[in-house]
Image 1 (tube, rainbow, N blue to C red):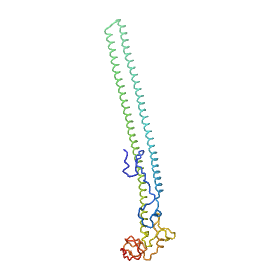
Image 2 (cartoon, rainbow, N blue to C red):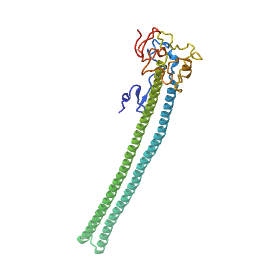
Image 3 (cartoon, rainbow, N blue to C red):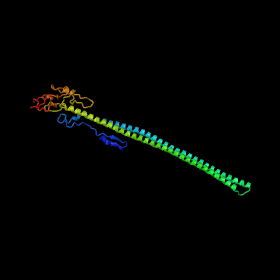
Image 4 (cartoon, helix red, strand yellow):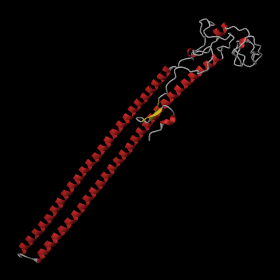
Length: 346
């Protein structure tokens, strides 16, 4: 019974030729979409430059490697199943030849028995004829010596001799026929037993062959399914890792000075704060974030630049250097506002 591949999830279908479940990945992502996370920031509309594109080549390579491995599995099973089939074909031929050989041997034996019984019958018939001839000769001699054409004694003696010869013939014929029939019956029974033995050997061998083929096919199908499951897991993990890294990048960017609060002191990407006039933010999963150039160029005397640039525990929201701090729930509309930690200007 074909298996239900839909229980494995989206993208899984049944390959009836191998009774295996085959996985086709959904369309791969291309770029990271931060949604509306940067609306109102200095990076609104230009964030795609700061995120890594998804490496679709990795998936294509993985798919190719998986298909190559599955092809190798199929070729290995073709070789093994072909060997099993060859062995079974040879054994079938041998069993067929042995059955024919047993029948031929019995045919020869049966013919020999028939010939022997035919010769015995001729011998018995010849003996009976000789007995009759001898009895007749005895009568002739007796009549010539006695001079009597008919003698009750002579005829009685002749009849006795003939009856004795006939009885002997019948006994011998019966014994010979019985022996012949018994030999035929025993030979036929032995042949039947021999042929039955070959039939049992055939059935047992055929069952073993079919079971080996079925087991091999199941193993091949499971192997193919396992290969696609491993590929699916690798692809899902790759996409998850890529997305998580991009979200990490997004979170770091959101905590950087990209929010213009109207004071003119917000950090504007591309404003000449960096040597190359660009946002010095890592955008590759092979590098750790490095804010060295950025924070060296951005000088705020009262800003703690060690660790987190913002004091999120007890911020001095009156400090212009803390504008954009997520812990200060306001915007600096007037740089002269007198604001104490966490309050709003009057």
